[in-house]
Structure formats: structure tokens, C-alpha cells
Length: 123
Image (cartoon, rainbow, N blue to C red; front, side, top):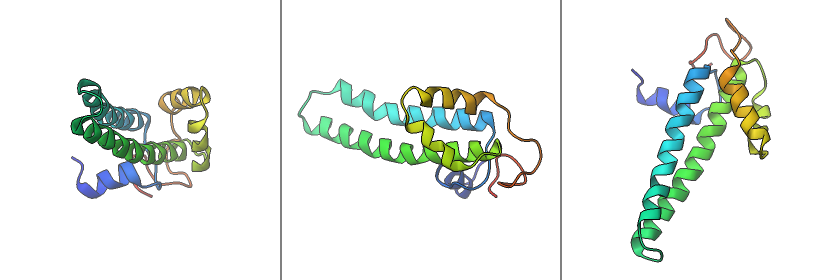
């Protein structure tokens, strides 16, 4: 069971390593949390206070999820033994899809590396 500080580390910190499964599931949760306000926005009439509320909530969710996706990608790259700066490729259209697949499919380094002693734990 995860506690609050582990969730903060998982979604917002850049140190440590995460496994393929944790990266994929974390990204899936972020996508669902981001999609819900967008879905609700599409159900209400345009220009109403309710549509403004859902659009602002979507924008806030997008900004938070952007940081979380970068943090997860950096930790996943660390698990592969690569520098976190390589997460920049996630902002390149089409390349980002390939990068996501690589991060989901390639196994990390076994044992300790320079980014942490074990996977799914802070440094």
C-alpha cells in the first residue's frame, strides 16, 4: 500500500527509478484523471458557467499531468540507466509515441545503477 509521501515521490519527484509496469499504470491513471474533466466539458452547453468550470479544471489537470508525465519518464529513463534529460523527446510529435513504447517495453537494469539501488523506490 502506498502512503502519501510515496505518491508524491511517484508522481512529482524526479529521483529514483520506476519499472515498466509502474510507468504504464501511472501514465494510465494520469490519462484517466486528465480525460474526465474533458469528457464532462463536452457534455455541457458551451459558454455556460459549468463549461467554464470544466475547462478550467481540465487545464489544471493538464498542467499537473504534464509535470507528472515528465517525472515518471525521467524515473523510467533512470531505470534504463539513461539520463532524465532524454525525456525531452516526449515533446516531439510522433517520436513521443515511439519513446512511450520504448519506456513501456524495454526492461530496466537489474540491480543498482547510478540512479538508485532498486526499482520503484526513491534514490
